[in-house]
Length: 350
Ligand SMILES: [Zn+2]
Image (cartoon, rainbow, N blue to C red; front, side, top):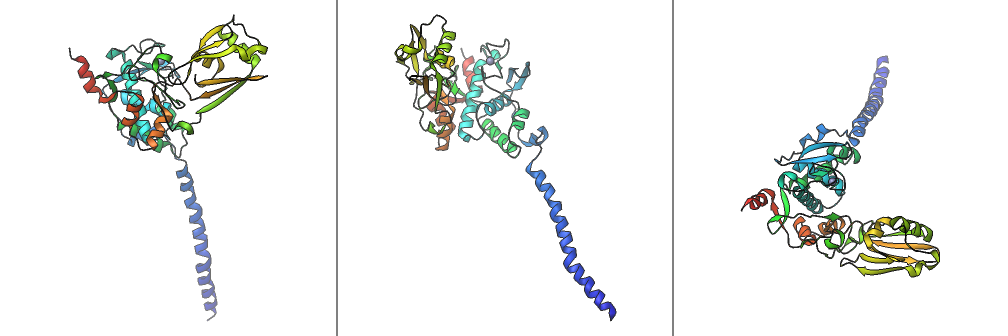
């Protein structure tokens, strides 16, 4: 009978303490993989599952960062441009429109297809810089994103590229030669003749609504009168300006169709709005100037040259249910979207 006491004690011990110990241990144990899952290590192998898009067109690109020429499959190049030129958080229809714009730009530039290539680096179709189109490698892009969302982000880029594979913008059955885009128009895009000096029927000024949410919809730049004069003298060494009379020495003479400064008189000289934009470090040429006793204040609308597709405008259109086709046909007037093969065949006809 004296063993019963030990037996009860043993059972009680097993029932109460052992599960606590085991569960506690398991509890600790399962935390580790959970923590690891939160920070997946993203390597090239992880993304192999994502379909690789094959293309028989090769792009010769000067990789500015690594100072070497590399050859890329067209669609891989397009993915690198989309992920460098547009935030992945943008609406999928905007990303698709960006893919088509990027693809059209490079096809129009390709030396093997009669294009003139990058005019900054000889013998290549494009460079990886904003001079042509910004481009980033997949490896670098994955590293820059938060590891939690990197794979999902890359899949979204690939969806935009893959679903528009081989599509380009055409005008009158030919590849559109001057596809331009920019960050934020500020409400109205610009006619190409004011910025690039040539006219294209598809690069006319159009309304770009819903952009108010863009971070650079309106920016201000304030500088002392002294600094303003210093910068103007850098632009035009013989300019005649004085701090005391500055308010009467600046006059906007002409606006562009898209609401940017076309011609402006400063002191005894005349400038373009674009000259002043760069001299003063403004985000666009859509600016107004206010001069008080101490400072010169620029109020600036939009970000970029303003020609062609506004990326923020495209995102807002996408969010409102417009398709990539709607977006492209809104920003590039009178264009069509076609398969590269069909267009190149047309081009070969006598
Ligand atoms: Zn270039």
